[in-house]
Length: 213
Image 1 (cartoon, rainbow, N blue to C red):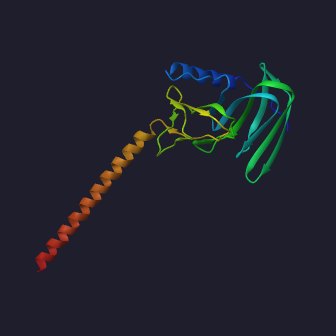
Image 2 (image 1 turned 135 degrees about the vertical axis):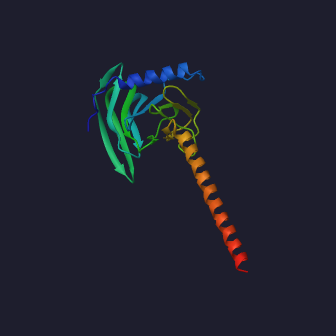
Image 3 (image 1 turned 45 degrees about the vertical axis):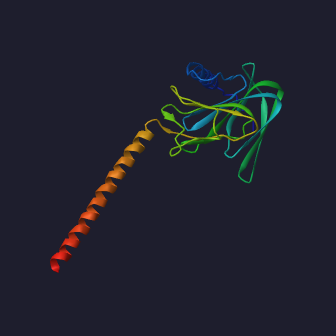
């Protein structure tokens, strides 16, 4: 298995987009130079992780694709060894030269949920798909508890991890809380209507029994 050299400018664009979102949101200062940036779009997660060295390892619960290495804006030739054991995929990426740049790859998503491979400690930035958000416990939350959630044109979730970790994000449409609220109001109204009908029937039966006496 060889690294894919078909790397579009999209990975660079989503890193710039994350920078713009953070800079314009009034949030606390976050250094993206050494951040792992994840763009959730089109049912896939595009991950851009800073690396340094010649060999790198990825552990994931789902098969990853389109692995590539970039150094000084050019693709670096490398090989990828994949193994699978007890539900876990392991990848060993070996470059032909020392790399100080970015490891890029894609991970499939499970519906409206993203579970990362094991991420090296440091800053992790996840960009939620446009039109979606996260943070409501009944609908979808990030785990572990994030450093910050930034609302903008796209919601951005930021972690500052102190050890190798897996991050998880459940997300939902921006209008989902409002729709859920309407649903509960209708459910409450239906419950009141049924309860009123039940008690009315009980009163009628009691009146009939009194009339028969």
